[in-house]
Structure formats: C-alpha cells, structure tokens
Length: 193
Image (cartoon, rainbow, N blue to C red; front, side):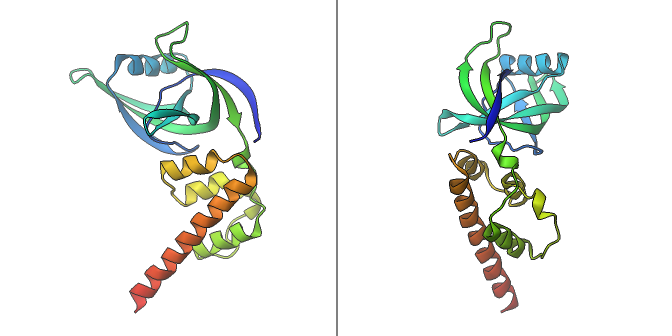
C-alpha cells in the first residue's frame, strides 16, 4: 500500500466515511468538538475525520478543510461545512493532545487511490455504466474518481480503501460496476417494456 509522510493531526471521530473533494455539513454540540473547530480556524489547519463504524474506530479517514461555520449560541450548537482533502491511515491515536483538549492521531497519507486505473475491464464497465465511449481522459481515471462518480456509500467506500492490495480493490470495484451496469440495464428494459 503506497503511503508516505507521517504527521500528527487533530481528529474528530465521525460516523461517515468522507472522500477527497466531497462536501459535507456536520452539526456539533460538544464543547471539545467546537474547540477543535475554533483551533483549526484560528491556525488555518485541516483536521482528520477517522471513520467510526459499528461502534469502533477504523484506522482510515480523510482530512477536511473548513469551508463555512454557522454558530447558534442560543441553542448551543455549531454547523460546519467541510471539504474532504486527503485520505489517511492512523498509526497511533492520542485521546488528548498535549496542547489542547482535542484528540489527535499520527497518520500516514494514502496515495494509492490516485493512481490511474490500468484494468481494461474496469474502464469498459465504467463506460457502460456512464453510457459513454471515450468521453473522458482515462489516463486520469483513478479508483478515487470511480468511487466519487459511482456515489458509493460510506461503508462501501471504506471497504474499497481498506483493501490491502490493488488486485483486491480493483476486484471489488469490478463487482460494484457489474452490479450497477446490470441494474441500469434492468431499469431501461422495465421502462421500455
């Protein structure tokens, strides 16, 4: 798995897997979470959203940039719009950072999702799914692009990213693409019959 650069970042465990370039809005009530947002705004820092699933942490997550903050002091909550930036794998979780009341983690950036897809069957299935032939530059088509285009749910995205090698990730993407192409065909035949 291609990873590099270990870095310590503030983290906020989150019950949804976020992908790079994905925009989400979250509502926060806990003071520690609001403190994390305030610190990140003050120092213009990104923070990590490790995926919290089935009652436990997973080591994968995505850093996010704060785009917009709405504070409602009377009701005691904060609504924050975030943009996914970089996938990571946690190597160590620290419940509380020495400089703040926010948890932090040592992370390694994941780069393997940005590599171009080289499997001809995946490209062919994706063309069928999109009903398009050579409308995009397939040299730039990556697993991350595919996941974004297919609008996969958080658990499915997590399943793909957490696979240990390229073959396993591509096999899962093929399975998903075959299923989505089949569904699209069935929908068309139902509409036209």
